[in-house]
Length: 181
Image: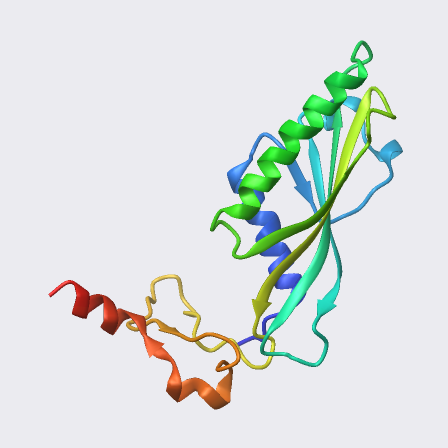
């Protein structure tokens, strides 16, 4: 059994966005613009960078902070408005992903764009927050083998979460059964 880490969460966000938008590239490895060929940037490259946690000291209710940096190349003949439209289309994909259930609870706090200043390249930076997550203990409720399926689903809401409140959690699978009778 392993303890959940911010890196685990960032990796799951990366994998979920890859699955949802396979035409785009997503990575957790920041590189300078010069590291990319124009054609690599044409479909859009999203880089996810962990920036911290909050609130500090509350391991049972921790949010992770990260930046998502989208880059896109529009071609030598592109105009400023072409860049802006490409950024907005890419940003829309990211925003739809964040508001879906694909990777949990991600909220975009702030967006900055190139403001058409770097034609033929475009970019956006989103300050994001994901969570809350429980980093307080072992992840013992996840199945170890893909064939294992939990027989019960337990839930609770902050502040009544964590090991000390385990007996107070609601069993959702029991509630679902009651509603279907």
